[in-house]
Length: 395
Ligand code: ADP
Ligand code: MG
Image 1 (cartoon, rainbow, N blue to C red):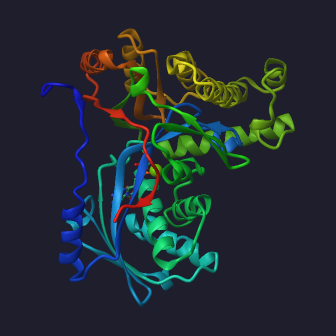
Image 2 (spheres, rainbow, N blue to C red):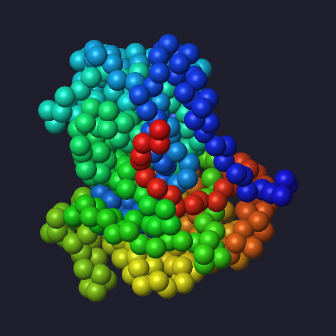
């Protein structure tokens, strides 16, 4: 339907990417790799508290055509940056605290590999992507993980999935200076079609749980508010600190260790603000376990809807990380018939997800567009999220 408000994302043209590689470097790539963005179904800000998260890998991915070099130079070009022109960084110059712009997500992987005494060489790389950048769908992990997967395969590092994700995370944390947990990279590396990943972020174990929505007549809409709060980084750091302080005052290693059963009495020991912060973390992690249990048992996925709504309320009232643009979209989706909806991602803007019956997807999407227009918020960008496979060589 041409007048649908649900967009079909542009696909990445692999042939065109290889052609561009040839034009840039006057050589053939050794191969082509892809790694997806991700969206988190439930469990927000739980990852740095040792709790549970439940992401899916998306069909949208970052694709890299790569050729191994004999020296230590990395040349990388991206359709989304610098008008597609290549930037060059010598790996031997890469240090923590250096400024490499967006190329940090690429050379940071080489730096992280060298830290682990893996033999590194330079690479020539051409990138293309259909993961929206900066929308909370982890374009950064798609980038760092596609590079980690490619480097590992080309140099025969023989790394397991978790170590590939670790390289991506180190690149983001230590060289790009982005303080993320491991969820984004694990989701990008370990995604499986038709599954969500219940990740225990303390034990770093993944349980693949069935999430085949089309078979159940369902769709997960991603509704990008197209707004981002300029203070998001500072707020994120503040929430991390509050979590740590709450854990310290409660005498536990991490908020993960607060038992749900005695939550109310335990939290009484905290001042009001920390009480609310801790309550969000503990209950949202519990909601992941509950959703995981339902999905693993093969229950109707509609049953996770109320957990999504409760998660949103908890982020809004206790963790205070939602903003009017996303609250409006969440409320509009539920009022229009979504089984559940919540903001996803770090907060202060970004995306809302809504679990909807397939034949109601369009009307829910329209209701969201209308609600945004009524409040004079930006028109949201809406697409269907499809649980897809993780980082892999595709040519
Ligand atoms: P998100 O991961 O939610 O999309 P981040 O702020 O964590 O947002 O990461 C976005 C940054 O990652 C961009 O500003 C850029 O530096 C880098 N990046 C992501 N995708 C690409 C790409 N295809 N080409 C170049 N840089 C990219
Ligand atoms: Mg990111």
